[in-house]
Image 1 (cartoon, rainbow, N blue to C red):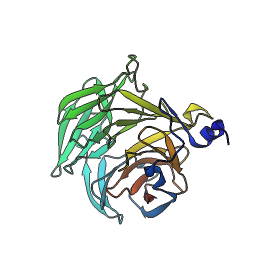
Image 2: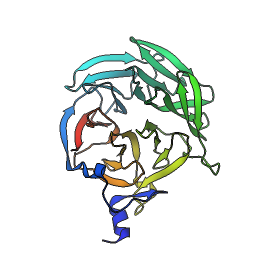
Image 3: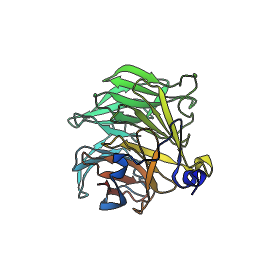
Length: 300
């Protein structure tokens, strides 16, 4: 098999290229990922499941296309449900290191936090709409913002409601992220890189903690650019990056430098949208259409 065939089979990543010797973390990936359990929820066809976040190894927060954020146990029991303050549909959710639920409200242009079952407005915008959100290891929030005109996209870091950092342009002054209305998701890696799944850009964009562009992963170069259809994104204890590929019903696994490692494509994923990991590297994949969350073991 030549290099072109390898790229066609496995994937492509710009800026960084990988070596030929498998890393120790790559060797820890099992040959055939296993479905440990299926978590059935109230989400599904008419209320697509779009975001999932681990509260603990036993409970998962989820949200879809209604105004309720639901906490489920691994057994599929509904533990509690919280309605958004505005009664709008939440776009994305995250759990802080203190166990508080944070969600973005695109229509109201706010970021909100749930404290003791009470929803409090944390950040408000006039010219920007928040979409993806994640909580960092330091306790900051990273929020993806689309301009009202859908011509600009940026990432802003907050401590509480205080703006600390804006990430928007590369060193050449060009936008790091595509423009246009789309759901975008974000996570912080263990090495403090910031990883953004850009659905319109058909890419995963990664910058370091300072906001400097490290690499952009665009999936397979052998077919059209839009063949890679990323949605949710997460990272594991080995700093590997996992992102769903909605159209092709699989998960891409990359190393921390953007090199493709493997797919998870054997678990009968049906419209995989978001994903998260627990403290034991168990992967939870949220299926938009079925409303199921599949718990998957992919590491030794």
